[in-house]
Length: 337
Image 1 (cartoon, rainbow, N blue to C red):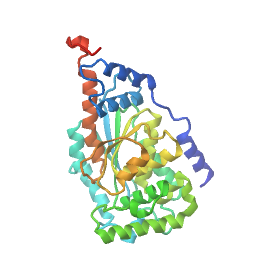
Image 2: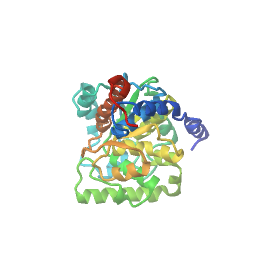
Image 3: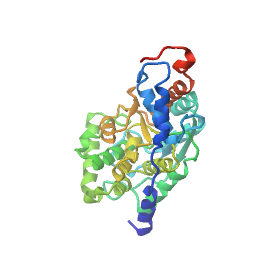
Image 4: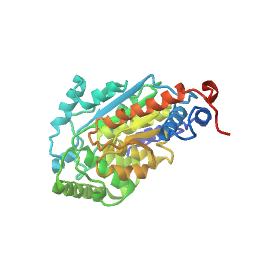
């Protein structure tokens, strides 16, 4: 990759802030005196501690929750890996903008602002079975779009995607980063049958063989096998870390888009939770590889940020319990010895 792009990538991961350990400790101290047995709210307690640590506040809040969906098209669709044409990506973006998609309803129901960011839908990435999906400059620009889409001061960021062919990209990224045959990662996507899934896995295997040792570099994995929208998600995850904003990732594609950061830095995704475990075949494997908690498992595989936005309701409940419950002293309830 050209030098200025390499410098740009190094700058993105240099001196990223860590969690506020004191804020997390303050949450746990308060949890210990609330009117409930210790640990009885389970993941809700973990979620509020995580939120406080990354918001850097003893009392976390959710006044500004943003859902951002990035959209891109993929040249690998030329290999027949989706039953839908690439034109559906642009049509769905129009549906998002008109408020007619599932994500619009879920975001509204959970008090979240929604926006969609299309990335050059008229110019799909290159077919990664033939050449890298993006040039270094294209990759850098897509990362920058995602980075710049994050608003400092946001309390919680939910990320999602739209792009025909991008579950193939996610399978390729996952296989390159975490190993195993493509069949471990390839799933039905937008509705493939068994033969279609087998073909999809074969396409991914061809791509892995083509790019070879270049895939030892997580940045190159994202550039060669991803899409503009997955690169933008990676940029947004990095920006959120820089601005101390906790992130809810959506399902398989979104998790795969962020996954290179877990290889670049051991704690690279500590500011992220996964909104839900997708029904897409490879996502359960990916959740295990990323070692990040997933809040919901509802057999969903829509994308669009839908699982992340739905999980906002869980995080809101966690904050409401933490900030609104009485302590044993306030309630006049006897605590344990």
